[in-house]
Length: 363
Image (cartoon, rainbow, N blue to C red; front, top):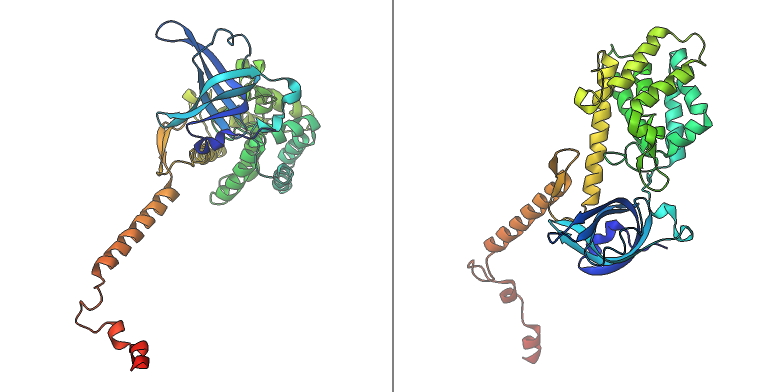
């Protein structure tokens, strides 16, 4: 059974550990003298860890590939304020040694309850065409199983088993709340867009050993896959309005919001614009939460640079706690300086007012 997890690095700093990991990425790079070294990203269910192997590299270069599972011995230390592993020994693990639950992160929420929550929202739809469409997707056992287990992304946000469902349920709640403030929003259309906007991830991503792209996912992307899935289901919904079909297609292809982010069209009606911004908000809030969690061992409130958000992050709760603690310390020191020593104020001390009972007994 795996005992050391990447989230425990702060407990093992400057110590040699032996543990198992899945290889998330593998690169062979040259040292300054031209000799090769291994630069790996290792992963388990708690996170990712950069690892380097400097010595005896040649005999290990072809011993494993990306997505293989390794038993590794090495030193945990920090480099540029980030934990890394210097590998001393490694070997490829056999299938019988692997417990996949140790390596793929999974939502801590109850997947059954999340799926039930999603169905509860769909049951409130007033538009019969949209309701029938989404219920058809949810009744497809293959799609439902994948929807319940797929990550929402490879690494940027909700990158864990159940992440897609977790993200969509969160998005449904926010869409339901915000749409009530804008009478021009068609709630059923917005929520259907939220259900469909990332459904292609179930075929874009593979998540059996680690999170990576399928060949179709790499070549087409999830939006094209989603349009295909939509066409397939719409063919089975009788008398589905063509105008509604066009709006759903636009919701799918515009939800990234910008050309630079992969959308071939910008959001051009209210539900499309709202879906883009709320999807982006939910994704970024989860990205922040995950970054704070990965760096929870840091004492200060500032995190390292977050590449997906393009900035370091301030943990406001830590910041306020530190400020509160500093204020309390300053108040205590100030009170200590202002408190006069016994007898200094010109008033008799407590001890001078208390009779010496032992002296009286002696007398």
